[in-house]
Image (cartoon, one colour):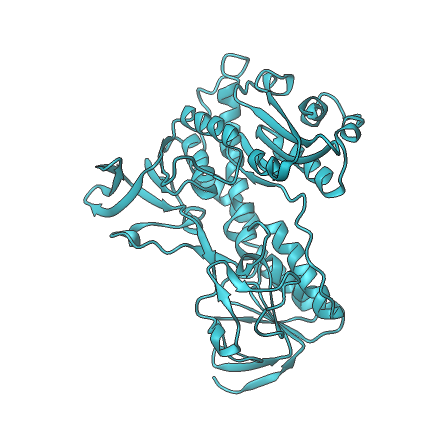
Length: 453
């Protein structure tokens, strides 16, 4: 098919949360907007990441909760995780997302396209042989698994494949010490899978508080998951009975027999194939090179948001959403507003979960700032005793001069909700005195907030 379409005010590449947010906002203001994606509409979070992952995690949570209450009134003898049925439950959510999102775009007047897109000039994009012209473009193509180059890398599956497994094998090796490996291993282990995590570094999840990471690793191993630190994968080979993973640690090579190997070793911006050079769009390892207000440094007609953009923000869905909003506003109004990244929390949804917002302890102590660190072992607190959890802790970092929160780090069940309050405090500049003045519903996990300070 060949030809050229009429000109758009905005053409969005990528139908995830950043792209659809911007497309809907600009279309609502009367702009002629087009959007394209080679994959089903919805993006990684709704279809291949956050949402389906947490549905599967719920099954694992129930198993773990019963285990913690063993001998405390609950018998787990007949309790099992039915993976196939749990997957059907997951698909009950994910299957309707693409059409629902496309229907919303249509209602807002957005023209939708499916297929791989690439630039043919500063204002031209080709999709399935048809060239489209636009005054502006927003690149919001997200991220993809980082390429691996060791022999046998083709035998690995990625996070998308894992979330679509119809059945779980008996043994899984997860490569990488990040979110994917830890979250998925915690799910699979509660389904009875023998799990191994191979981490290249000395400590996994390096963006989080080291003291709480140590507790997470301890809890991970208690769940039956082996964590190999300072270990490098040298090869993966197929055998008649499964796969063999060759690893090196301290100069010694060993072999791990397994049934499945999952790629959890990081992600990179998904911008290959866009032919960015044809549109004079500069990029680097972290994505499209943009100013703080999300406009391309080399082509003023182009903006970028989400994981495809080189911004200070964390690679998180909520960040992609508000970057999409800011990009849309800047394009509509001709402004140069910079997104506010303060107080954005992030969570590793292991069981229990690990959370962070704001600065790490060593970051907060820079520049001569006077700080106080409030550390609490909360494993014996009522909210954890009630459910039988024996591993939990919090660390809150406070600026003594202002009494404001600089960082909060929480490891424990339900703390992914509490971290949001700390995020709000950082964003609004609330003091610990103000936080302590809150009267919380009791006995909720949130009522522990004052004691954490």
